[in-house]
Image 1 (spheres, rainbow, N blue to C red):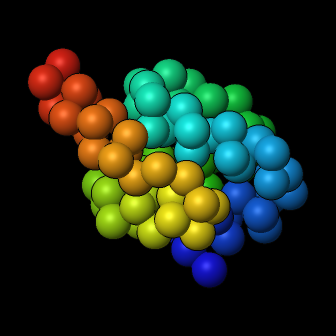
Image 2: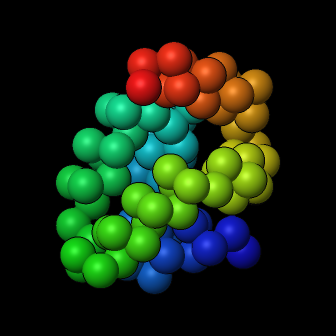
Length: 85
């Protein structure tokens, strides 16, 4: 299982919330960061999760594919994020 998904499930984050999170990541990555911070994860795990999301788009792609979502939206979101920096 994808490490991002595994961490979320270990912290009792439901499938519906996980799907919503990855849909947010594909549509608006900055808003998704706010959503991640509101999941109630312990601070050390929250920081690790944020780092993985920001630094390793391959993990996001794998999670999106595992969830059956559309990765082309992730690519669009990534391009938007790079433009705004």
